Each structure stands twice: as C-alpha cells, then as structure tokens.
Image: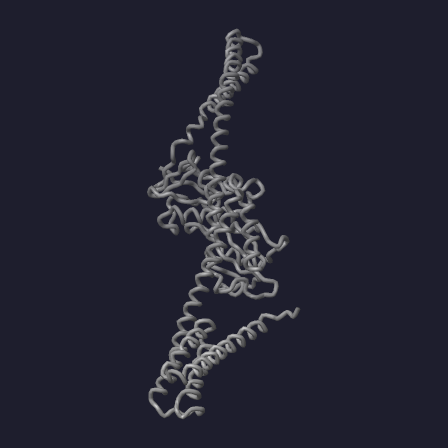
Length: 443
C-alpha cells in the first residue's frame, strides 16, 4: 500500500477539490442541456447556482472561484447567443455571469470564516481538556516533589521538549527534570535566578537574553514567585511557539495553585506538629517541676542545717548552697516556660506576628512569607528588641551547615522589608546592627 507524505496528501486533496468543482459544473451543464430545449434558457442559470455554492462551501475560495468561472464560461458557451462561442450580446447574460462569480466569492469567504471559527473552537476545547487533565493529575499528588515530577512530565509530553523545575534564591536548585539527568549549566541557573527574582521570562530567545540553552517561565501565585519552569529543545529551536504560550501560562497557573496547596498543607502539618511538641514540652516541664524541685529543696535545707551546726567543711557547704540555689532558679525558669506564651501576638508598628498561628499581617491584611522568611522573622519576634547575630539567624533558619552564608540572610531580610516595611529603603521594623546582626523594633 502506497504511503503518502503530508505535502503529497495536501496536493492530492487540492486536486480532488478542484476536480469536484468542475464535475459539479459539468453535471449542471448536462442538466441545462436537457432543460433548455423544453423550457428555454431562462432557468438554466439557476441550475449552476447550487454547484457554485456547494463548491465554495465544501472546498473554499479557490475551488469556489474555479467553479464560478467554469459555470460562467459553460453558461456563456452553451446557452447565450450566439451559442458555442464565448461572445455575449445581451446585457442580461453578462449580469448572469457576473452574479455567478460574485456568489462564488461571497460564499467561499463565508464558508472559510465558518471553518476558521470551527478550528478555533476545536483548539479551545482541546486546550481546556489539556488543562483539566493536567489539573486532575496535580490533584492526585500531595508533596512538592511529586507535583514537580508530574508537571515536568506533562510539559515534556505536551510540548515535546526537555523540562525542569527550579526554585530557591539566591542559589536555584533543580526540583525535578524530565528526561531525568538534565542538569542546567551555571548560565542556565543564572537565567533561572533572574526569573525567580523578576517574574519575567529569561533565557534563550527572550527579552532578557542570557547565554543559556533553557528558557525559564515564572510559576507564581498572587504575586509570589514559587518556582521557575525551564524548557529547552535538543535542536535549539524555541521550546514553545507563540501560539502555545497561552496554554503554557494556564498550565503554570494550575501548577502554582497545586504548589500553594501543598505549601498550605505542609504548614498545617507543621502547625499540628508544633502543637504536639508544645504539649509534650509542657508535660515534661511539669514532670521536672514535680520530681526535681523537692530533692533540690531537701539538699538546700540539709546544707543550711549543716552550716548552722558550724561544720568544719564550711567552704564546701557554701558551694553546695550556692549551686542548689542556682538549680532552684533553673527549675523555676523551666517551669515558667509555658507554651501559652507564644499565643500572644507580637506587634511591630503596623505588623502583627502571631507565632502560635504562624500568621503575619500588615494593617490587618495577611502577608504571605516563604518558609525561610517566616523562620527569620519568627526568631526575631521571639526576642523583640534584642540584636540577633547573623550566625544565630542562619543557624536557626538554614541549619548549622549554612551559618556562614550571610548572603542567604541578606536576601531573606530584603524580601521581608519589601513585604513589611512602609519604606523598604529606610527600614524601621527590622533594624540592621552593622557587623553584628538584626533586631525587631517591636512595641
């Protein structure tokens, strides 16, 4: 069986369309030749009209005009005086031929418009179906890594290109990649960082040109940039055509919603874990107070009794008494560390920080913070007015391994000031102590 390529099939379909228009005109001519001897040539022009309309409606403007021209020539040759010539002596015949051509043109234009609208509607339906299927797959996953794997897989399948998802500033990290093993170069990571910071596309063939092979698009939710999706082709061509950019935007919006949902779910689980930890801590502190306080008090009373008896080991007894009083203060301080102390919000100007609810608001409106930003702000709020060193804040928010990465802290403080300060360039809430650290100017 002969296999035709796509251009060959298109040429064959065009030939069939033009041949079909000529066949319908020829059939109309035969009918006209049968009608004319019996009822005259007056109704013959109406016989050609259905053929011209059908050719224009079925195959478009080209076959429609060819059918109209063939109908006009056939009508002129067979049915206008003098017959069997292409001369026309009557004005009515000229008008009939012109009408056939106009009908072919108008009908073909209308049919082309209808087919175009049908193609647009079909494209919209296909795009909506793609978005709905993508959203269903995202709903079936809960963790950030699962969502990233599904998103990269779908972008790879839909646009037939390499896909990856990166997040994190100032050093973007690859969360997922399809095909597996794709690793961006330093130039690609620089383009990703630019997208994560500005929210604008960056990379290959974009307005923000970078010496990168990938093009990155922001995944954002309510103005917050959650991640950057990178796309690239092995042959260097643009990964997404301009016509497909709206579809890509809708898919990234669905991904942003899923990532935001996963973040909120994780915050809810963290909050539940925090409450459970506080409950256990309260129980342990109560146990310490009930079990250790009596023995310590007994030791202190025994030491005081020995001192009153003028024992020869007065220096040792004095040391025992001093250390006993320290232990009593330590135990009292531990028992006073009630988890309920975190229930009172911390106020700093127009900003309210609720450590118990893990919520931050400014002028009564909720402010969305990334986990690292919240960790830094929460540590400052736990000790308002006190200067916390760079190392302390980095160790608390990023862990001991990152306590020397002051650039991480600067990025987080800059983001906090942008979201909380009225004049970020002149901060009043998060105050810098040069060479030492930061403090929260709380009320």
